[in-house]
Amino acid sequence: MRPPSPSIPEKKFLYDALKQSLRLDGRDMLDLRTPTFTFGPELGWVECAMGKTRVIAQLDAKMVKPLPERPFEGIITIHSEISPMASPDYEPGRPSEEEVTLTRMLDKVLRRSDAIDKESLCILAGQRVWQLRLTVHVLADAGNILDCSCLAGIVAFKHFRKPDVEVIGDEVTVVRIEMILLPKLTFFEQHSPSERAPISLAIHHTPFCVTFAFFPDVLTRPVVDPSLLEQRLSAGLVSIAMNAQREICVLHKAGGVPTAPEEVLRLINIASILVKDLDKRVEARLLEDWEGRKVEVR
Amino acid sequence: MESIVLPGEQVPAQHVNLKLGPGLLQLSSETQQQAKSAPVIATRSGVLNHSVNKSKWWVEGNSRRYVPAPQESVIGVITGRSGEGWRVDIGSAHPASLDGLAFEGATKRNKPSLKVGSLLYARVSLAHKDMEPELECFDAQTHKADGFGELKDGFVLQCSLQMSRLLLDPKHFLLPLLGSRFALEAAVGMNGKVWVSSKETKHTIAIARCIEAVDPDGGGMDETHVKKFLSKLDI
Image 1: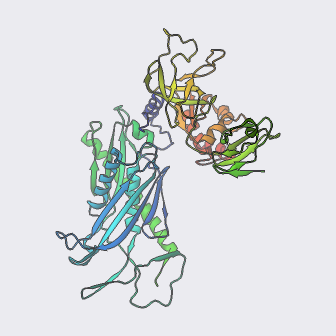
Image 2: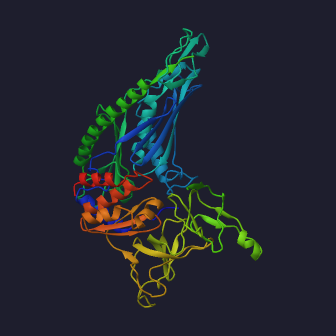
Image 3: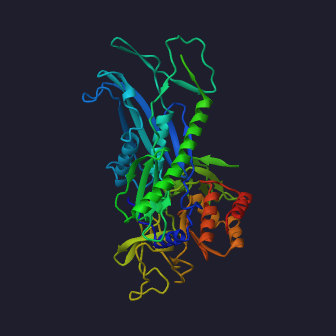
């Protein structure tokens, strides 16, 4: 069932508050909710939470035959689903408008931005390549699931390690596929020299997505990382995906209010600052997690 | 003694004048004699409570989904007109219906002017299992408004059902504490919706944030922490 649109008092209160540059959760207009990451026992499993919005991303790899037109490239597929678990607004079955937008944006931000080097996923040209499959599950929707999903996705790519393989003639041997990763575990002594630790993916750059919400009132400045109510009452959304090197990967504005070019440039500048911050936080958190685990090879 | 029950579990509730509260159900039986000893089962999970003389039993739990029960006051949003009345979303599985005449001083000629999207404070007058719930905005005996009716301005926030019950408890610290800081109006619906209003926008935001922080489903903050939290806010 589609929920009814927010009531008149809610609408009025939100617009009034935003006119005074106040947000309902006490944030500044240009404050992100601080994302927190929880890593699972497996590499490539991450739960990203921004306020009450929670998303799980999981990455797994398997060996497949490459596409005939691209024999040197690995394959990356992204699956995303918004189930009624996220919020009663979503129905199972037919993909909703939000789901289509989310799937397309994830595809643009994570896959088509060429963040992951696909050629390094090739094992044996035309014969065997790695297929990476990213699954994104939205657990709870409290606004801005797009940014949270993109963040979870890219962190999953950075967290993942693929097994090392060895090619002798036409034979492909997975040097080790079983990854047992336990926190604070010493290396097993008796591993044969042919067994190696899994290796991280070749990642060119890390794009992050930042969403701004515009409101019908012209004098109200756009807010970043809209909450559910802000998102519902907004007149339009602008999503900017960029990396810490200030390279824009995606700029997405589907309809909504007319916006001056200067305004878009201003948003890009704001986004670049936020993205730098995000990048630092992600790197620090990944390092912290990696220090906390030792890869056991057996 | 606290005992936790799960749905379907049998509850040792027996009394000559047994009264069952939320979350409990007496299984039906065919004859009168059997009816007295028919087993009582829980329909929700939570902590089983009973009154001192064991005549009243109920299950206290926390959930987010509201199941309407008669005489409970709720906050709803009007979603449309239907015939003589309105359809109201109160967060239950089915929309509730509100008769156009169920207001103080309403007649066939003179009905309150409500729009789609208006916020209402109403009482559930009828909540049968297989029917849409019905609401009323007045006391059926006295025909007085009794505080019910349209809620104008202010803000409505969602909380867990347990939080809304806590707020209705006169001994709970939060609303008196907030009331001592600034003037506020509040209406608490049993359906996990709380309407708050105060003169200044930032006060209303502070109230909403405090309620969210105290909600056992969210922060579960206690009194001393809320005081600290309030002093940190710029109000």
